[in-house]
Image (spheres, rainbow, N blue to C red):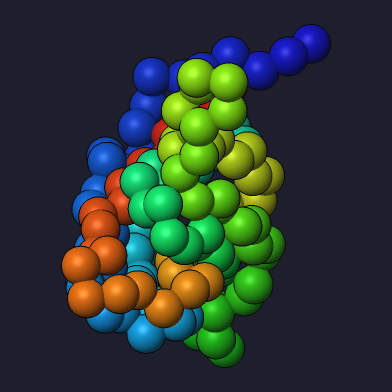
Length: 129
């Protein structure tokens, strides 16, 4: 049996701004408070990377009193067009977010940006039931 998309948005589309001339591996942190109720341990992270210059790295952590517990990371490719289809938004399914704690997403650029290459990525999270 497959998953169906829940209508429960955990994090609405949130801007992640990378300034002009940002150094490689400039980290942006998005903190998400654990929802009061959940019907599933599966979540979808949707990330929009409009940059034609850099891939992004997305790291996911559960926030623990002992420190941030690493869950997983993924590379989000830079914007590309293949046979007329623009690919700049990606969907990642992750099980195990919010295991009793809040979540921290760390998003970084994999290439240094030039003087006019700043951009705004977007990230959102929803529950998958």
